[in-house]
Image (tube, rainbow, N blue to C red):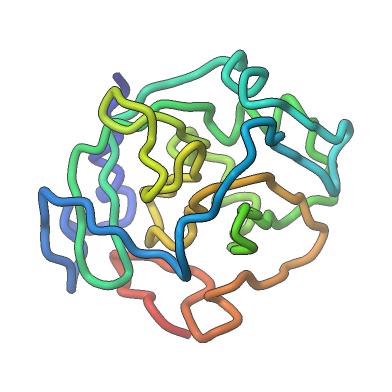
Amino acid sequence: MKDVTDLHVEFDGKRLPPGQRETSRFPVLSKGGTPSIPNDWTFEAWGAVDEELSLSFEELRELPTQTQKQDFHCVTGWSRFDCGFHGVTFPTLADRAGVDDDAVHVMFHAHDGYTTNLPLSECAREEVMFAWELDGEPLPAEHGGPLRVVTPHKYAYKGAKWVSGVEFLTESERGYWEKRGYSNTANPWEEERYA
């Protein structure tokens, strides 16, 4: 397991970002209820890519995988340390799709209609993962299973639960919470919670 719990050093901050409290629980927060996802769903990657992808869950899990120990920071003020996430890193998936030179931004799409955005440069990190396991078990539906994005260097609303695909954009767009006043940058060590 790759331990990335020291990434706070890169942001000149302590492991527990300001305004956060550590919890061993994993509270459930989302914009609505847990969606019903069909068994034959596919993961899509499209936009400014060489090859648009449509992968079954089985095909996605055949890509090279990684297990990481990460910290998880919720914008509502709690952090859970040492989460064991397993899945495909964003760079692995981006390499598979072949990202165009003019791609600068990413929009994650979810089965419940949720979207969230990040600059491509903020996604092109090994710590950004499409995860389907948490602590050695299949990711529970209430935490985004079967597949979610994890972004340990950002507040967790940047990591879409129930992710259905990723769109590579040639200009910035805002996602669901970003359009509603949440920070577009979401750096926990700068307490970038709201715009």
